Length: 232
Image (cartoon, rainbow, N blue to C red):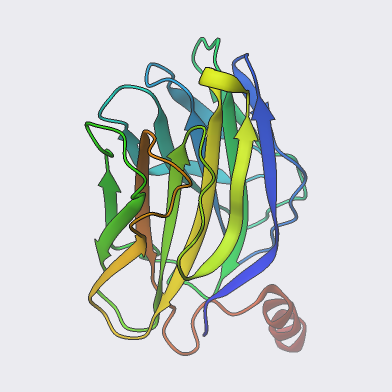
């Protein structure tokens, strides 16, 4: 079953406070939702995520080497999801934060993200926001996110999920960009690239592989319902 990005991304931003409420999303059974959170300071922790009758867990997290920002990726899965506005609960926070959520399908539900990678960014600001990941499976997707500040990101290649979501302003600005590339053959992939930021700034990135389901796997909700009616 081919991987698919379903619907548009939901987003949310705050300039201060300890929770982010994103826009509404409507996942269905068999989908997985990934949610990325970028915070302007590295001292903020994502305590939990709730919403959509999904069980949420962290996939990866990375802290910028200069201590300027933090970035994490979470997944939400569940047998009976509902339309809802996901809420990100943060530890005590007086800085901006941004979040993006996106629905996907066609993945291996038993092992959806076999590989992850993170990049703490440069010790001295540069404009080369990127992440390298080695995928393990053919026909997978490499999905990346970057937290960056005061410089727009231009995606060298790939498919945009959401680009340059901005929370706050001036020195406290927090930006979040999320994108993916389709990987036909397993191996090393670089997402982002040299000179991808408009100017030299601090940044950090993370990525994970989204593994495709085997043929016949992750049967869509409507087909499940049809088969149950046929059996009964």
